[in-house]
Image 1 (cartoon, rainbow, N blue to C red):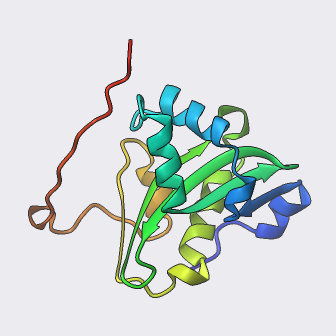
Image 2: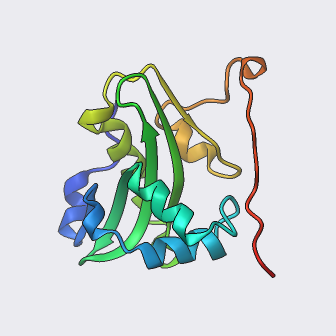
Length: 152
């Protein structure tokens, strides 16, 4: 894979990406997913905590303050699903999402996977830079989808 974003350039500006779950600010993650995202509005906090516990999580931090997040659900051998990807509004437009996706697909525990998957309504251009494309045989995929119901 071609390197699109230079790790050192972000690190010099005080940013870091970590998979250490102890650094995650679950309040920030929950607030964004529950109130701002189009895909997880209404997610119960305890369900998010369980999802984080059972996923590989990538946090982006600026001076230890969380500014972005992504989860990867994987068996670390054949398949990975990237989800809950976001950059807080004040930090968008500087390449953090590209850096985050690049870091995820290059992670040593995820090397050599047969299939990666994700769903997006509006970030196709971001993911296509890393080799993602529309599902080649959508007729072979099925799903059960149960959206969260956000209390009024």
